[in-house]
Length: 259
Image 1 (cartoon, one colour):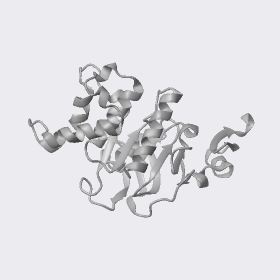
Image 2: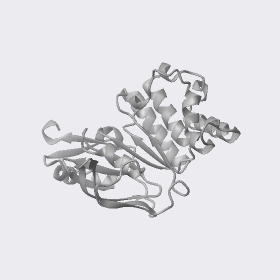
Image 3: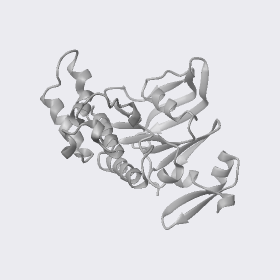
């Protein structure tokens, strides 16, 4: 179920077009992210979800339009970006704590090892995601869910107050998906983090987030979960009859012919 949303805007996308070279992947994108959001951006592969995240954190500049930050970046608005797990190079025999400590290297400066404050930040981040016992394990020896926790810990070690995750449950079994989504919900609730992530799995995330943004073939809809997750809005977005059924407190989205 959705909860009251924060009313303080953090980032505005104003009629933004995003893409690579001259090719736009997402066009006419207008959207506001608020402080305290727990937001899932959902769409099929290739819809531009990861592109939106890269633009949000400043990796990618818009082709058109503008992105307005309501707070100074790196000071009051600090992004912790969690890329997809396959970006980890398993060839290097790095330990979990070493992966997390990398988040503090920019602060230490060129050729200097992060100091005691960084060590404390690493310890705290590992504890936040419940992998303190894995600190000395090689990253290549971990399960998919454990690697994802290590990447989240690395983002937290930067001192982030806005956690941005790219397909955090991709390729996981149902139990691992649930564990990662519960972790993200806890970090949002207890640490008061703004959490934004992308996924192609609507049913799996709709019962965790507070707000949804849906992308389908260039069309876009967004709002509180209970407003967006209706048969009428989903049918209009997907241009096919869709039913939203309730199983206890959980919502299940089905094509009408399968209901």
